[in-house]
Length: 337
Ligand code: TRP
Image 1 (spheres, rainbow, N blue to C red):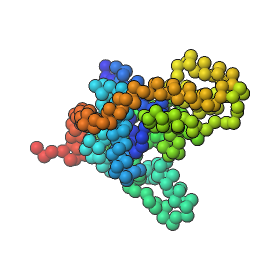
Image 2 (image 1 turned 120 degrees about the vertical axis):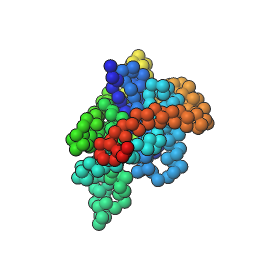
Image 3 (image 1 turned 90 degrees about the horizontal axis):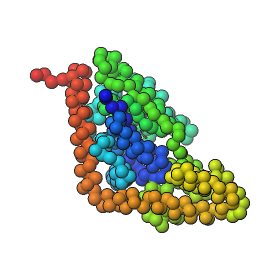
Image 4 (image 1 turned 180 degrees about the vertical axis):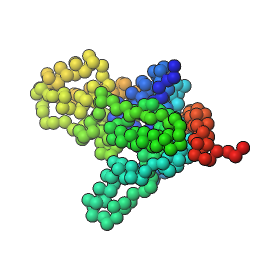
C-alpha cells in the first residue's frame, strides 16, 4: 500500500507560541505517528525572507522552531523534517513553475491584493509600492514545496487554501503542457475542530497582534503573561461564562474532558479571576515543564539540531533530485548523453 503523503511548512519568522502549538504543531506531531502516512515537515525559511529581512531574527527563528518540534517529540525517523533552504531543487522547480504560471493568477493572490489595497488606502500613486517579487511570487515557491514531493494532503490554516488551489492549477498546467502525470494534485486540509486560541488582549493569538504567550517562556514570565490576559470586571462569587473567556479556552486546549467540566463548574460557582489565572498557570507550567527542559537543552546544542536537519534534507533530496532530473528532461533541459 502506498502511504498518503502529508506535507506542511512553517514560516520561520517568529517564536512558537501556545496558539501555534494547539493549532498546528500538536496535530502535526500526532499525524506523523500514523503508520499510513508519510509526513514531510519543513522550515519554510526561503519564505521567511519575504517577510523578514533581519538576518538574526530569521536565524534565531529557524533554530527555535526546529528545537520546539524536536522538544515536543516529533519522531524524525518517521517524519522527514528539513529546511527548505537545504533543498536546492525547490528554487529550481520554482522557476519551472514560474514559466507555466499565469501572471494574472498571481495578481489574484490574497496577500498580494492586500498589499496593493494598503497602498491604495494610503494614497500611494504606485499600487506596487514596496511589493517585492518575492511577495508576488510567494505562491509559486509554495507550489514548488508541495509539488516537489507530490504531497496528497496539505494541512494549513484557512488563509492558505488559495495557495493550495494555485498549486493545483500550476500542477495541472505543467502536466498538460508537458504531457505527463508529473505532479499529483494536492488537497488542502483545514481542521475546523482545533481550537483557535485567544491572546493576551482577547483577539486571536497571533504574532501580528503582538499578543502571544511563547510556548517555552521561563516560569516567571509565563505567570506574568497569564496575569496579563484580559478578563471582565466580575467579582469573585459572581457566576462567570466560561465560553466567553480566553483563560478557559486556553485551559481547555490542554485539559482533559473531566478537567474541563470541573473548571466549568468552578466558573458557575463564581471562582475569582485571580484564582483562575493561578490555576491556569499551575496547569500549563506542569505540562510544559518537561518539553521546556528538552527545548532548553536543544537550544544549547545547535550542532545536534543541525545534524538532524541535515539528515532530513538528505532523505528529502533522495526524492527531490531524481524527480528534478525527470522534470528537467521533460522541459528539454536533459543531459545530451
Ligand atoms: N505559507 C505557509 C504559511 O504561511 C507556509 C508554507 C510555505 C507552507 N510552504 C508551504 C505550508 C507548503 C504548506 C505547504 O503558513
